[in-house]
Amino acid sequence: MKIIFRSALVAALLIATSCGKDDDGGNSSQLEEQAEQLEQTPLEANTVADNVLIEGGSKMEGMPPTPNEAISLDISKAEKTAFLNEGFNIPVSSDGDIVGAYLQFKDNDGNLADNYYDINLSQNTSFKRILENRDSKKRSPRQVSKVDEANLDIDFNNRIEPGTFCYAICVYDGNGNISAPSDVCITVESWGGNNAITGKWDLVKQEYKYGDTEGITVVGEEDCNGGSYFIMCADETTYTYNNCYTADSWELIFNADGTYKYIEKGRFKGIDTFASSDACEPVYEEETNDIYKSDGNWAYSAGENRLVLVEYSWSEEEDGIVTGSETFAPGEAYLLYDGAIELEGNSLKISDIVDDIEYEILYLSKN
Image 1 (tube, rainbow, N blue to C red):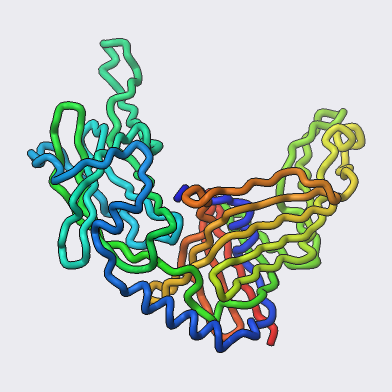
Image 2: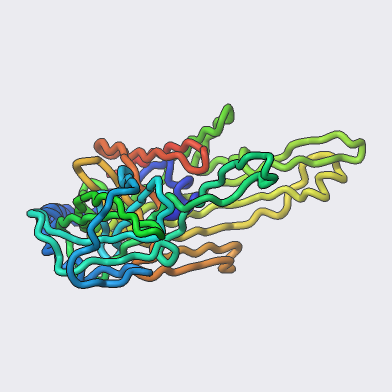
């Protein structure tokens, strides 16, 4: 799964109100109970090993090489959940200059798969290079020193079902040093998972905070707090003007089968910088009618009160003309949101921090 947050949509989701409950309550409850039972099913190690897709990974028979534990491994940020047709990620870090990883799956009782994966980090993941200052006398101010962090992308094919399994992982450098292995257990989540969420939710408002700046977007009211521009007038004085946006409707629909649909309709009024500079006052371009749509899957973890939104397609229109769209294949979906929510009666609140901006959304459902 690609762990990339689409900031625009997450921001839009952060303070909102919701609309009527799904009238399929009985079926939703049954699906929720079935999902919880499936997620507790132990998965066989070889079943998992035979049905993962690991870019840059070579499947090897037998056991991984014996570690000498000369370098470290930190997987404290490793994910404990995975998703159907998507998989999971493994963030790793080390004090060594790592080039690869050995990954072996096991079941809940510790029984190992008959094979393991040798993963080339440069082919699987975007890794972080650490820049260090060198002695100024050597006249080499900054130099790439080593690769010590990576985020492994482990995808599933459609044969892996909800359940639980574990894995052991170690990393190695170019000199043959291998870290001690670390174990992690994973729950493969079912899509959906809470019939109290299913239904159509309508945005009421979005509140945000960035440093000392606070703002609120209310459906139906013009908000001119975004997209600031500095404009130089003829007398060389400088003014700050903002673009304006009116949210006409924001709908977020959670279906009982674990799919979601998001539709945002609004009107955008942008600053004409040249005309504003000449007039030394804000001159706006003609207002446009914008529509943003997103489709994908959702999952809910009751133990953590956590909601996950995974996007498989999006599109945007301006005055009826499509200006952008994209569809993602299984394993390449975008993670829009992954965090705790507040769900009480007909109220759903989602909070997040995106690009240092704190958002909060309130959805109130209509009976």
